[in-house]
Image (cartoon, rainbow, N blue to C red; front, top):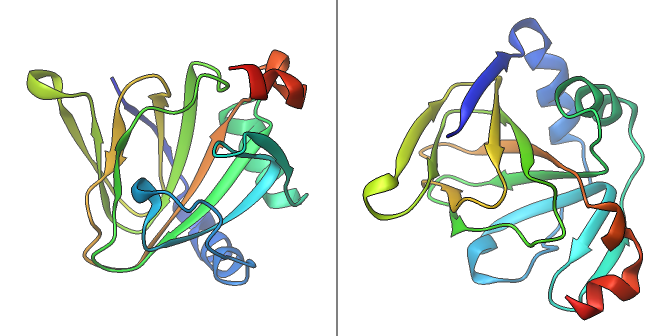
Amino acid sequence: MPEIIDNLGDRLPRLRAWAEAQPLAVLIDVPIAAGRRECWYGLGIDTAEPELIPGLDDSLVQELGLRYLPRWNSGLLVECDAGVGIEQHVDPACFDEWGVTVSLGEARWIEGRGADVTTTALHDGDVLRFRTASAHGMEPASHPQYSLLFRTILPHYTNSSALARR
């Protein structure tokens, strides 16, 4: 079950200014990511190939990642325009059990399927912990919204030949 574990509060203006200055582009060209722009930090992953993608090194991302998911090695900043969401999906098996997302804007997180669906309202600055192996996504946003996602690529998969065999 997803859990809000913190709110960034007075750090929001700095984080929002940082997010708006990042080099966002369409990096994940699959239906669940339609209409959004992203930027990888640490290690990214192209699941279509599959291969690891070197991401940017950023002190702000390092600080937040170490605080909320100490073993993180894969960060993803996602920008969604109004009307764009993230379709429900399950993260690839190369990711560890837990992920964390930082919401910059209002959003509704969806986790589970069928009778087991949980919807969690995310407020500006909320930090949410979730299970990567559970179906999850976000309803389309009513306003532009950023999410900074932290996950851990398992050590076995940091060898790119292991990704090709999965």
